[in-house]
Each structure stands twice: as structure tokens, then as C-alpha cells.
Image 1 (cartoon, protein in one colour):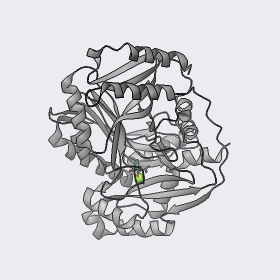
Image 2 (cartoon, helix red, strand yellow):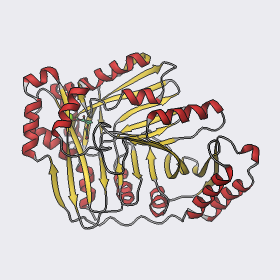
Image 3 (cartoon, helix red, strand yellow):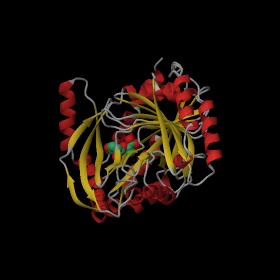
Length: 441
Ligand SMILES: C=C(O[C@H]1C=CC=C(C(=O)O)[C@@H]1O)C(=O)O
Ligand SMILES: [Mg+2]
């Protein structure tokens, strides 16, 4: 990015703000040029650093820096959003996420719920790129706010090319081991257990210990290039930790009162050629175990949406094809009741049975009792929330990277008919994309 021009333009707008404009939330924007948003993000010294691109074709790509305000509860976030909406004027986007299980200890610097209103937003859309400076005047002195905004603009540096990814030399350790996994699958598929808990999504943490972990933005940039029909996200709350991923699963997308969600569960590999690929897809759609995995998800989503919405409609089961995998998906549309907020949706929908199980509480009890790795934000939520619309992904197909280790996560829905070794192979296929990137120069 040519940093001087747009930054000077924003400073000028800041200098010439009238006192009467200094209220509520305000976004100052200027066009700019940028080559690679992650190359820009990766060289900044301001934290937190966030990246978000929704799954839709032509989705706006967003890189965010700094936080004007942060929220560690959905209630606090919703209160802020409602207060600004009530006041009228420009409305902000909040970005952030949630852990899989707020009732369990998570990753050290990742609160159970954390959304923020960023100080800087760099967006790339079809027409070009825009650099924005966000300001907030209602709950602080305007002098202090302007001084902080200036300091943040002064700290911005010009984009640089991302470092090359080097082939990684690492030691791999899976938690649980394949043997423990087989024992858990045996317990979940025991008819007595299935009688009260038809589905549990069990997960594995794959730890890759290495002398130097890769630049997370260089990794995400390569990963997203092969993950077209996925969400792309990254978050660094502190300098030495990053959580990145390319999830294919939408928690929900809300446009006003209109809601779209989906049941994504049931998995097979891609074929060697088009014929085999189609054969695998047809087998998947006809397969009893995989159909049951998907059915558990949509039934629970439909039940949860019932008190929140009207005109709930579900589409046909179809296949989505990713780089290494195919999944069964059903889209669900609903019209939300007027009282329903993002807080209500986020208190009700996650964790969906694509990552938790059915019934939720007994599946969670099994997971809490058996899984010894911390899921943290894996199989949680990440995305964007605003008054007008929201877009959130379920954080699967992700990596948590610190200075010593890359942790990869994968889960598989265990239902009647699940075989331990097949489900173990499904875990490996789910991390195949990122493993191939780590093995490449
Ligand atoms: C829990 C994960 O995937 C879920 C989403 C799609 C298919 C799934 C399955 O077939 O088991 C899982 O429910 C994961 O990738 O970590
Ligand atoms: Mg499965």
C-alpha cells in the first residue's frame, strides 16, 4: 500500500472534524491501493490483528488493526450495538469469536467470548480498496480519542511481501492416540450409549513441534488460495499467537430479519478423476451413517430456530466439494422474529451438532470427560456482527500457532455405524490441506 497518501488523507479528515460531528461512532475513509492484505497486516506493530473474508463469491476482504472497544460477553456486545443503533448515524462492524465450550478452560489468551470494534479497517472490494479509521466519542473525551487515533495512524507501516514458507521439520503428536480414539468410538457406538446420545463429535489435536513456526499470515495466504468455497479468518490478539483457518461451515448469515444457516456434516474424499469423484459423491449421499450425521445436525437446528423464527425452510441434501473433501449440506432459510438478536442466535445455535452432538448436553459431557486437549476456539465461532447484518463461520479446519508449535484440529461425528479406523482416516483427510502446505517449500 502507498502508505503516505491515504494516511495523510485520514489525518486531514481528523483535523477538520467539526465539534458537532464528534459524537457516537464515526468512520473516516479514503481510497487506497493494496496488493496483499495479509502482507500489510503481517508488518504492523498494532494489535490485535484480524483478517476476515466471508464465503460468498465477491465477499469483501477485511483486515483490521487495534481495538477501540472490546467485549467479553454477548450481552455487552448487544448492548453496545443497540445503543449505537438507537442513536442513529453510521454503524460499526464488530469482529471476533467464541470458544467451543465456555464452561471449560480454553487457550490462554483467548477469552470464552471476544468481539471488538477495530480502530483501523482495510477492505478490498471489487472496485478497489478502502482504508478506514474508526472513532468513538460517546463514552470518552474527544481529545483523548483523537490523540489515540493519530497514534494508531502514525504507527502504520507500508505493506511488504509475505515471507516464503519453508518446508517444516517437525515432530508430530496426536491427542488422543489412535488407540484411545478407538476406545472412545467404541463407547459412543455402544447401543446403550447411542440410546441416550445418538451423536458425539469427537476431536483430535495434532501437535507439530518445530524450532521455528511459520508466519501465520503467509500460511493463511497460501491456504486460502486452495479454499475457494470457504471462509478465511485469522486473529492475533498478542504477537506470539495466531489462530487461522479456512472453514467451509456457516454458523449463520443474517441480513436484517432474514437468516440463512446450514447443516454441514457427512464426509468423503475427493476422487482421483471426475468419474471417481462423482461416484464418491453419490455414495456419500446414499450412505446411512453419513446421512444420519447430517440429519442430527438439521433436526437440532430446526428445533432451535422454531421459537426464534417463522417460515423455516430447508433445501435438499447436496454435495459441496472442497480441495480434499466432499460434504453433505442442507441449506436452511428462516425469517427471524423481531425480538431476535445476534445475542439470541449466538446463545442458542452454537455448538451445532456438526461439532458438538445430540443431545447437546450429554454430548458435551462425554467430550468434557474424555478429550484432554483444550478445544479453545476450535469448533467455536468467528465472524462479523453489525446492526444490519451478520456473518459467522464455525471454526473448523483451523490451526493455532504459537512460537513453538502448530496445533491442528479435526473432529468427526460419531453415530451408529461409525468405525474407529474410518473415522480416524476422516480426521487425517480433514487436515490434509494444511499438512500439504506445511510439507511444501
Ligand atoms: C468437526 C469437523 O467437521 C464437521 C463438519 C463437517 C463434517 C463433519 C463430519 O463428517 O464428521 C463434522 O461434523 C472438523 O472438521 O473438525
Ligand atoms: Mg463424519
